[in-house]
Each structure stands twice: as C-alpha cells, then as structure tokens.
Image (cartoon, rainbow, N blue to C red):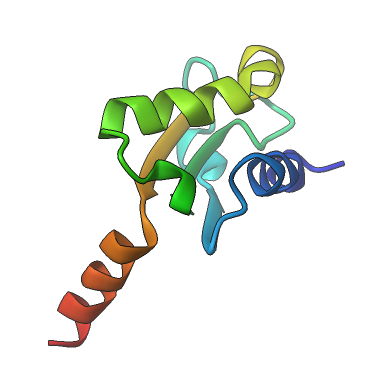
Length: 98
C-alpha cells in the first residue's frame, strides 16, 4: 500500500476529518539526507477535525504524530502539519474569498 494511502487510512480512523489533504513532497527532497529512494518520505498534511476542539496547536500535532507513530519511525522522514477545527477551516476559506 502506498504511504499516502496509509496516512489517509490512519488519520481517517483516528480523527474522522471533515477535510484531509495529503501532499507528497518527496520529489522536492530527492538527494537530500533522509530522502528515501523509494519516494513517499516527505509529506504536507492538512487535517480538519472536531477532535481538535479545545486543543492547542502543539497538542493537536502530538495527537497526529501519535497516530502515525509507526509510519514516522519506519517510512516517513518529514511531515509538515496543519491541524484545524472545522470552524477555523471555514474562517480560512472565507478569508480566501474576500
């Protein structure tokens, strides 16, 4: 199974996100330290979930890192995270249209 699909499955199971975006940034890091020759080692992820309500940014990211612990140890070298509540995400989208 592709790593991006594993990330999607795990985050969907743990967070029931209303929005989930996973971007494979590995090609930007080819040849760099930590880059896996198989690819799929660097990702940018947006998770929008009600489960982040009442959590600060650090705690939200800890929750995501905890859910992805095995993949981070075995396969993923870098993970850029954006974690938002549905209301925060709606505000971001509203600001883009103004």
